[in-house]
Image (cartoon, rainbow, N blue to C red):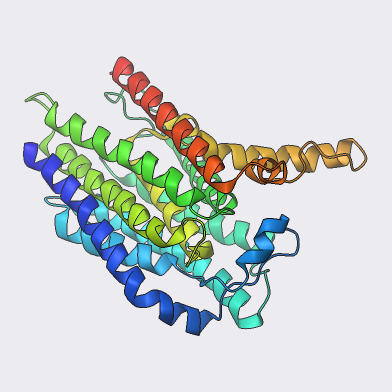
Length: 336
């Protein structure tokens, strides 16, 4: 069983190496093909300097995740292929959004309603699939909690909320990738440890599924770290909606298939903060006659406009994610 940990660590290192190599080879090509991203006129002043940064860098991450996962995820491909498919389909939505922006040389792609409809349709399909999978329960803590058919709307909510929260957090160089790399590293370790520490009476197929999902999670972490070599400030490439949708789909898949979705708001509290801050900003703007709660939402832009450096915001977000993930895993073990 200790080969499970080895395979997962190798998945992380392989994805890192592939992302780093592809970044070196493809960023110049992406710069020519996309002609750089168009900075939004609604963003904070520091973002005006990001105009011309190569975009659609998420394809680098997706390539690294696919190749590393398929090579190192051994014994069970049902979970792996489902997770990869979920990441790719949501990534395709993001790619379409990025393509529209680049093709029309504007900062707007798909509108909010178009995105939410497409997200909901995809989420509903995967929710039904997860519900029918034998090894996936609503919340897997020794199979003690089952909500029956209510799992489907619950899963839809988790998927849509996660993908959009990650997308909202991708507004500072390296922010979304840093937070994701910490979360997926913790989840990869958790899945490996639960397989290694499993009792002799444990279902072999469930162990194979968790092992494969652990390798996928580690591959996502490695791909994000490799991508950060080019995405940290000053960024040479942006993951775009392609990348944020890919990792959003991956995070949702890992949480649902590992049965840790209830821990997701705690482990990914920084992603949740992006969505909550936007909701609060809109609500207070309407209820207080235009007087907003934050200088700008998502909340990291509020700190950015108050003069907090991007590097410090990323460091704080990463540390918070590390601490909250550790706390969540402690809760998980207590409940076991």
